Length: 128
Image (cartoon, one colour):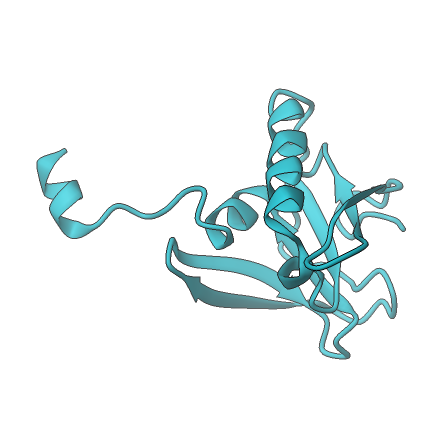
């Protein structure tokens, strides 16, 4: 699959799935983006999430390409819709296909979604 941002080939890696099996996820390390087919992010087992965190960390100092403001779905080429959602860690964003082919998630927002990083509370901001 080609990266919706830079059009280079994405790297496919497999991670542990809840209950059994694996989830194949497409990653573009230079763009810091992850493509999840429909509901794959929710199917990751805790060990799979941790391994994906490790992969993100291993590439944190790699080349960083600027992100476009618009992306096309790598499956149908329709424009991806910017979407915001909430987790316990706060708001996170991703870009989803209107035909439910999947979603494109920046690395940082995946870390937020999985509660690895979070926004500071107003009390924490006041103390800083």
